[in-house]
Every structure is written in C-alpha cells, then in structure tokens.
Image 1 (cartoon, rainbow, N blue to C red):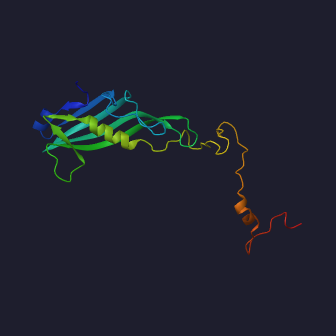
Image 2: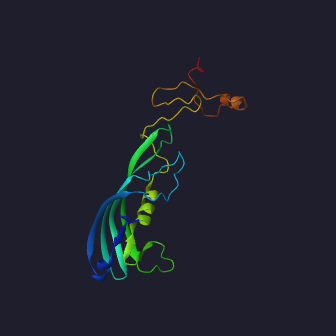
Image 3: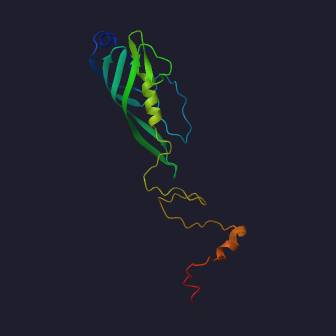
Length: 184
C-alpha cells in the first residue's frame, strides 16, 4: 500500500543543501494501527484528515523537516462530560538521518532514500492532545449530588453534613470577628 506519508528524498540528499516544500492532506491512521482510546480520553479519529505543511531541507547526513501539522481531535469535557472538539496544530522541527547514533532518540531514519513522515506525525499529534479538555473555560460541570448540568441551570443541592465534624462548626478562635447574629 502506497502512503502519502512516504516521501522520496534521493534528489534532496544528493544536492546538499537543497529545499523542497511538502504539502498534503492524508488520513491520520489509514492502516488502523492505533486502538481507539477510552471514552474519557482525547483522541483523533483514524479517518481524520491531517494537514501537513513542511519544508524539507537537506544537510550532510540527513534532512530537517520544518513546518506545521494539524488535525482535528475530540474528547470529553472534564467537568460536564459533553463532547469537545478542537484542532491540534503543532510546529515541527525534526531531523531525519541516515544512521541513528546511540543516545540520539530525537531523530527519525531515512530508509532506502525515503522518509516516512507518519511515525513523526503520529508522535507530535498524540503528544499535543489535551489531557483534560474543557467545553468552555467557565464550565460549571455536573452537580456532585444530583448529576444536573450546572451550565444549563443552577443547582440547589447542599453537601451533606458529617455529624463527626459538626462540633467544629461552633469552634471560635481568639481574634475571630463575631457574627452579626452573635451581637444581639
């Protein structure tokens, strides 16, 4: 299966330094390599289009991929559990080399005069996903006691009191201001 993510780079590697622009849209996980994540986790749909806008620059011994990558994501609001959608946009500056030296885990391999952008794109997009997205900054969330969505209507539920701590309610400290009720 031919992949848009697999780019021939023989001419770039032969004419150092040289540059080529690389722009395309492709499915995030066309081969279905990734298991769907849990319902409460942020994810990218396998068929979501990834916008790849890169410049490939050759140097002696490799290439540098610079530019931007973006893809739509979805998740669950951490406070009210509604569907949240957004776009992950990542600035990229990655190296591709002929051989990966020991301790150089931050480079990708050039194989048979081709680079495969897919692993790098998966890495940067998955690392950019929000861990706990919000539907909006002022989301009130769900009531802990009745489960009502407090964004739709205010909730009048009160936290139950624990009789074991009730005696602390009457505790007064030196220097405490007296309540208005105590002054009468």
